[in-house]
Figure 1 (cartoon, rainbow, N blue to C red):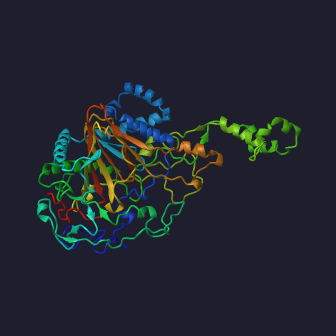
Figure 2: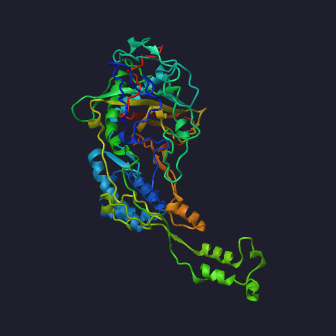
Figure 3: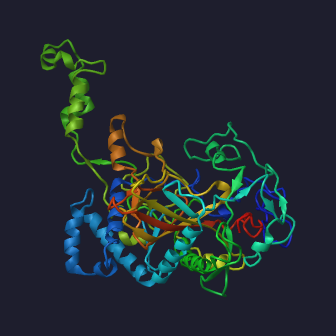
Length: 560
């Protein structure tokens, strides 16, 4: 069975999810599309706490001015090493690995202005390549958009370009379903064209409560989506992306060919050109982070399925000795040696001695470079383990297969679809602080978002904003070596915190939807003066799909 041919070019019937008998919840086979983050991507195997510490260190060091040159300065690295070793879990071996990896990253940064951080299965790209001219153009455009706002401001967050305003709404929105298209130049004249789309799109299935997942492999037992998937589909609305075409035979230069939803195609025409530049600069970073077939882009640095103690269990704490001590509880020596308060329902002397051993023992966090070297890791030979998996997995591949994407090559003729959002957090003497966002993935499943870019272009009198990331992981009990008393230690070795990334002014971040993100709270630095933080978000629709876009929906804004 092959995937359906989706098309929204306007030269025939609109054949996209929700139209022309194409189910709204259509999902192309996973091997033929990019991976989404709603119950599909899982970071596996687990990352160790030490690897997370290494990732945090490398991210922090790349925030240093001129890091890509300083990393090759041997004298300066003596100081950096001392500072790094003072951080939790950064050992000499961990530092040596980070130094080698950062030197590799520096060479790539010199060529592109981009760096991939927190790169395990998924990753985040930081870019300093956005020109100052683009920043200035965005600032000027934001002022014009704010001047156009007619409604009084009632919230701290002002969405200057909001994809959730006038989206595709089933049962209400007019759509060119048979033929025809709305070009950027014809947007204003398109008002009122098309027919109202069906109230409930064909193929939509309400939540299916009988769906279950195999607990070991997290694979679907039934052919349809899971309950949590169901909640991620919307039978009410969908974001409307704009159409983006590549304009040359090579390279990443693009042109927006249909209107950005809620961005005036005439009054804001200059801003369209600025957004085109940002999309163009986002393509290479997106190439670095897009995930396919649930296969991560980078192997983990420390692979183990258990932990090793620093000290061996003493003879008095062995189970044989404990059983021998308690073989005859009527023995006078036993009664004299143990306090009555030690006699619990869980055992007497043996329990007390084992508790003492648990207090005395220490555990060794696994080190990088133990099972495989940095050079092996770079080459994908990263399958060896410090402690082997408890059960054999015949499908386990000891080598990591790196892969590349080039959106500009694979989709040059087809083009891309991008959702644009411009927002401003406005703090005043009445609103001194902003509480941040909840953990979320961008868009619903029928928006098919597979990568995002965020660029902060204007900051004034507010505290540093941070963007945090987290991803789903799994820990299969049958794979790990541990006893019931060692679970706390195992969880300490495989800590799962969130990764935080500073939202530096004028730095662009690109990340896949396999990572949930959370915006941190911010507040005024000087509470007597207003302040703001303005940013633009670009969300890439999986180009293996085509969904209904502004090419297919005539203008909905009465005020234009």
